[in-house]
Image (cartoon, rainbow, N blue to C red; front, top):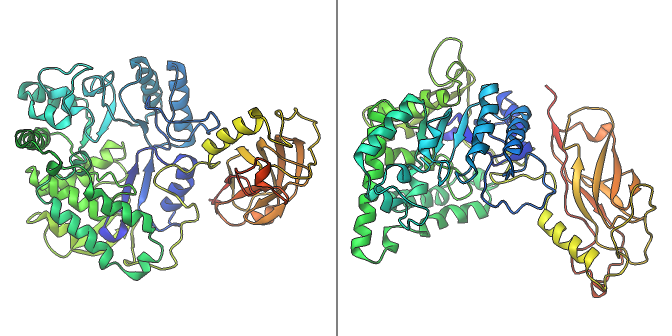
Length: 519
């Protein structure tokens, strides 16, 4: 992203606990990356497939009461979230109301994927929603007739039936409420932009001509996902000519709505929904090209990517414009982008925090927090843990495990054939670099007398509180380097799969302790 002149970015609540140390290290100039603003996690009613063992910041959280929605919002904000994120519009209305009250109380901006059917754009403009990512739910809010729960029209069909009077009314309410829109045209309408074929060609060329230093660490799975993105749905997948023409009308109306919005004074933000199926940097310029197709002016595009984005985050006093007292982020291009917006690609110099960024790629680039774009759980493979626990403690024929072990003070078993261990939780999740020797608690099951605990490959001492709880001592000498550490429990061999243990190799799933930088 930095090589494309992108000095700040927003994550929509995908990262959990790891987002805070990553963000702070970038802000402090320790890590080479765009300045990140994060939601940590998000609230949604979409089934998250949780096991009940996830931490409170693990994305995404599915509250079951208005009070729980408030408590989750408070937990995200207290942990350092830059914005409160809602992932859908299907929770009961009071859940949104109470959570947004918490955000308003703390001055935290709210981002809402207001897809409906309960909480859509019309509900969002009655509250302090600062942004609708994906322009979520706009198609439902402006179509005619008003959709019902059984309405089978898709997004493009609803846009094809856009009622201009309803659209104009919604636009005025969005502007009055200072709600910005991020349409993510590429993500919402794959295959429909006029330059789609060029986008694919440019992404393929990105990898063909990529700097070897970049490809030394660029995950091959990400490359495959980015190219597979173009093989998915598009107008070519609609066989009926009349239906295809109708969807093209819907796409043109989507573009027209957003031009109406920005021309009336709305803040339209070019976000590219960057994730494992996108080429970072390239995808923002592709999104800008769709803005241009919609008739958005170069100055409006530039304002959306700078000034309006900052104001959307309530950070207009810090970034977004070149003014005395603000963070000095400046890009210098070799051609005038007001004459041709594609000239934003002609990068000469990138300045971030007042320092010139060395462009290019370094084969030794390393992010100590291993921040992924989708979920970074403190304990991995919890679905495996839950399934294994049910089998190990519930099924007959499993030796050495039997019933769930006893409580505190119960001695560890010492079987001849040790079972497969599993970790369920780790506490605390984060400590500070260079701190004193600490004790961390691992809970799980199938801990035995000969179990060993390894911290980043080093065997560390522990005290067994019970067969389901270990108090692990991490010496201060192991805390000198910031990062995302690995902790596993290893049981002794021999392991005999024929005895009913085809669930592992004696090494547990991984837990992670985050060692944050000391500031």
